[in-house]
Image (cartoon, rainbow, N blue to C red; front, side, top):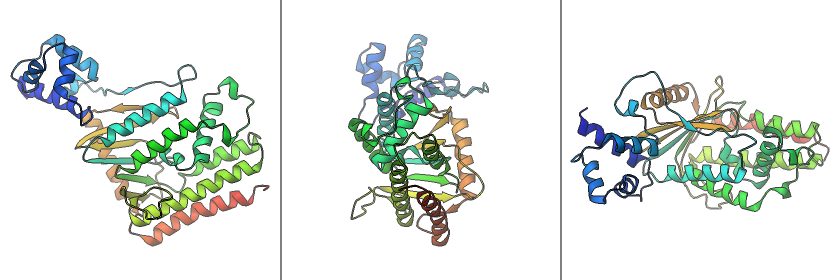
Length: 333
């Protein structure tokens, strides 16, 4: 690829990272402190980008020049932040996720691949009870904030403004066609967390655990209905209006890792989870192609249970419902 081709590829990458209503020329002009016309000439390859300008652009948009020039250094560039007790703020974390979801939805063609190790984060936001539990668990047990050390779990403590943001995030996820790969053990983590709080007497009574299992059960019926129809719809919508295509796979052997892959107007983007709550992002083309092929292989070794395979779908959802029922029966309510 020649110098002009590399320059055009550079601006193509920048365009892929902006929302659809943003002007590449205006943003580049502001960044480089040049006129919009001069920015357009650089975008078209009519005027070369200087080294100083290239440094500013690559730094601002976090573009790997190795990747741009197809130089194989054996390294992969990731972006992300490390969240810990000192810098974590739940409102900021939720706001960041909301911005990511809005960015994904800005593309015309989009697909969301999710390899489920446990219940996908978005499904905690269908019911307030589950959103409240996830919020409390992270603050008390994962980050161990001192003010939560002796605190009991109460549904009413969950801030309304946070749940409003959660619902917006869920709505955005529901608008993206998605492929989810599940295993029979994917629900174990939330079951274990509820049971841990029960035995540690973090709940005020078994009634709290019962309400959580009730919410999980209602969610499970909703997911089964979505799988049956082959599309997503808003919980509680009597007309069950389709929002986006939904493909659900059941893998009997491999448990997922909660990693996600986005295909946005043909470009691939991977989200890798680590240390429970953190995630990092890469646009590395080789890495993402490998991730895409890995997910395709997982799908080939799995059973598609959305819209087809009624018998397998019924079996999968029945097993989890029976586990929920047994846990509810063991409670003193």
